[in-house]
Structure formats: structure tokens, C-alpha cells
Length: 68
Image (cartoon, rainbow, N blue to C red):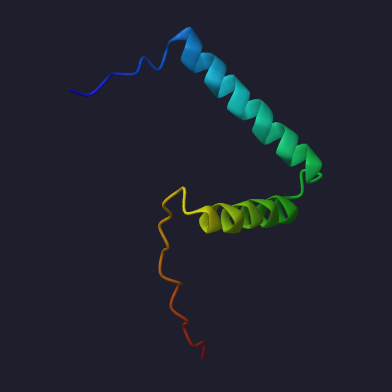
């Protein structure tokens, strides 16, 4: 039997608030620079992959199209 999660609960609101605060802190540390932020998350992904604690979906790289 699946446990239903009340997405409108006070507890869930606190979790969402905490996640948003963490994301904002990381963005501030990267100077709100999109490229630095992307590099940060890619590095974190590499580290997490090495732990074998999480499963990742690796999409196929986009096919290279030749331009005329």
C-alpha cells in the first residue's frame, strides 16, 4: 500500500522552503552566473555518481548534424 503525501501540509511547505534556500545559497556562491552554476551541478553529479548511492539516467548525446 502506497503512503499518500499531502503536498499542502506544513511539513511539506517547510521542506520546499529549505530546498529553495539551499538553491539560492548555491546560486549566490556562483555569483548568480548560469555557467558557473551549471559547472557546479555537473561537478556535484560526478561526485555523486562515484558513490554508487544514487541511480542516474544517462541520455544519449545529441547526434551531430552536418551543416551545409
